[in-house]
Image (tube, rainbow, N blue to C red; front, side, top):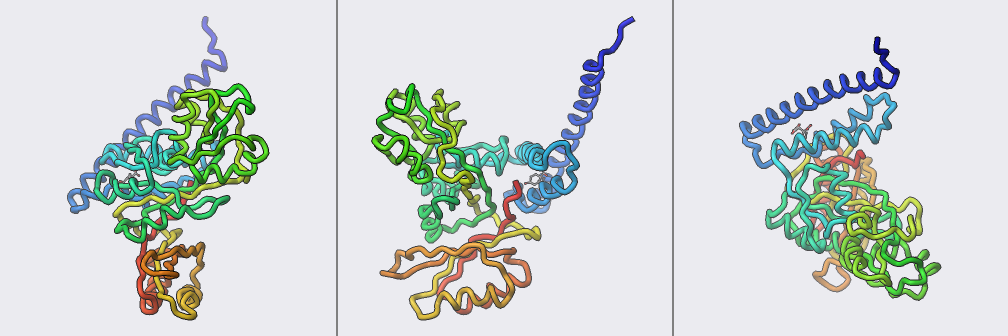
Length: 361
Ligand SMILES: O=C(O)C(=O)C[C@]1(C(=O)O)C=C[C@@H](O)C=C1
């Protein structure tokens, strides 16, 4: 007589559950295919990706989750599930700051899942171009970092771009010194993106004061350059070390332990309200006394929280500035719509860059 061991019994239960999960995810995928047909019948064939719906699905998963899986883990499963379902409807082409191995690529995967076709572009401007020229439906660009502040290249490109912001994603950024060197003393040059060099400035001053710091287009590019030699290193993520066959010489060298970068998703699509949204605006006032006060007043008047304001040169006249403003809510929300109407009447230019769901994951 054969006796069933506890381990064999548990594995048999796991097999039975896996069978049910497989059936259920395929039922879900079949539903997504039906959704695509319905969208096409309703004349929305260009618009399969729905960031508003995706954020509602993820928030619902978080609310329903009873563990033992962490909310974030459960949401990551559903992120991948939706990514795979969307790929059945229509695979997305998403431009990111390449080459492979950048934090922007990680942000793209965190936001869209692994089933998208991630297309590397060499600069932030090229990401905008790829979406503007319709080579890609979406792009992912860094917009601000908790240690270093805004990414000017991204904000400035919006002044001349017709693209909208369709979503945002936040990424905890852990920097590593990676390369082929046996010890720090062997390193003569460190490559990285200028933002990453700045995020590790104190560490570099202390541990590699004599090494040359060279800014390159991306962390992925830095890792690629370091791969060819023994006395050059790169600052990049762990995944870049794996990708280019480099060792991690020092881990987590960022000066601020909660170093986080916010990325935005650029595209042409407008996302519907979800109840937890942000709206980004580009405003030009002309150089009049009290101009900024008049810009902010409509938000105070309508009880709208302002999350961020940044001024940048307009590039249209000396000392002429534009303001990038992030506010709480969606442009279709009643109070936001009223504030935007009031604002529009008192500024020389108001461009609503987009209303989109706040980052969930
Ligand atoms: O609800 C939709 O519109 C779908 O296309 C389905 C689905 C999903 O898998 O839940 C897939 C892609 C969209 O971006 C949003 C949600």
